[in-house]
Length: 311
Image 1 (cartoon, rainbow, N blue to C red):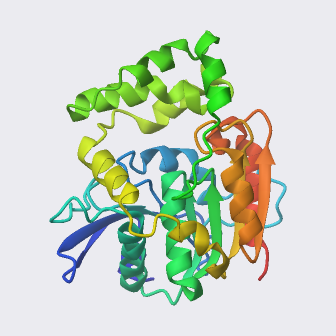
Image 2 (image 1 turned 90 degrees about the horizontal axis):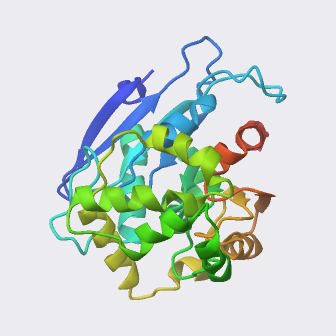
């Protein structure tokens, strides 16, 4: 086994970009590992990090005897940390943090891992946009693509009427206070504001927000990453490039979406599935932006079934 795939935290340098990148590898602890299956997880670029995904998707590298899929292998799962987050260095200029910039970093990771292509590339939310951007830019380099409640740069589908209705819903009133009074003067202020907004991301916030907070842990969010990426994506010369190139994706694709996701509305999933060559869309009712939390067993089952399906 190559050292680049040993369990733990790794770094590598890209001299042409003057950047250092960090990724973390999780491997099964049993003999049931399938060495041919590697899942690379692209984390959001705005500073949320990978810990919430590492905690939430553990069943992907732990043999899933409790599932009804026939394959009980665990997979090698690699969490790639975007430029400017964790141990991945910031670019020299903050204007180098757009979706295409971050997607291009996945090609550096692929070359570092010495993979001909990614067997499975997975992204959630903004991480899904970055993974999708890579699959558009390098169509032959992705075998299977998984998008979980992904963002689609250039297309907004926030459920504004649903969001507006939550203003008078006691489950969400405190979250609205955080939205209206969001502070970005420091990492501490930004972290506190985002923490208060999480209920808007769930169908059942009272039950599931505590789980998300446990998975995130005591992480401090980076205002620099949030502002740099948001500004860069808004200033793209071709703001619709991601939407227009959906047909370029060659990877077999699974899209999973919560139908009550008010942040990345279901219209994003429908547009993506419609314009791609080989995409399947699965939606879950009574589910928001984090399907593996609100619909854990179904999400893990659908993920493993898709990954284990023979090409």
